[in-house]
Amino acid sequence: MDSCFNSKIPLNTEETFVYSPNSKTWINGLANNYKYVHYSELDKYLGSETIKRMIERINDDLYTYWPCPTCFAIGYCFSLCTLGLSFLCPYTCIRDARNKLNRNIVFYNETLNKVGLELSLKEIYCSSYLEIKIIRPKENEEEKENTGLNKNTNNGNTHTVSKNQI
Image (cartoon, rainbow, N blue to C red):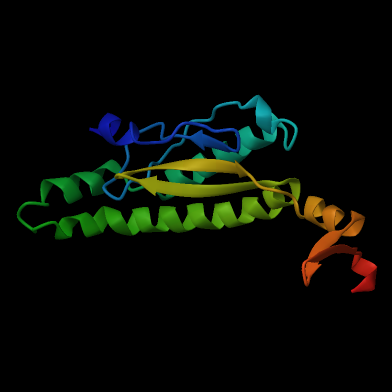
């Protein structure tokens, strides 16, 4: 069943790199493990070992907070007679795992944003995946402003205004 949902995960593009689930996903799509793939395009931003350790740490934290098999068994076995309320038992652990994942993403983005990358969790069709996206570093935008020259139009006339004149 997961293969049906995981088939909807998008492919990599020039600016986005996908780390798909490596295991089963729960009802809400969160996986307890994401597979690491080396993308040479990211090497110029951050070393491959750094990204590998980041994904491993995310996987370790997800595994730590993930419900035990007994909790899953209770959730699934009693789902019919409790009309689905038994899923609240594993859901509390999965909610904690998601919260830890979100905290990890915020923590890693503090470093990744400085080098022009952004990590995010994407959820689609009862599945999820991690995505590293190349963003424009702020330095490039500031360099454009400092070099030159913003074009303003005034009554049809185009002229350049440097940042110092403003």
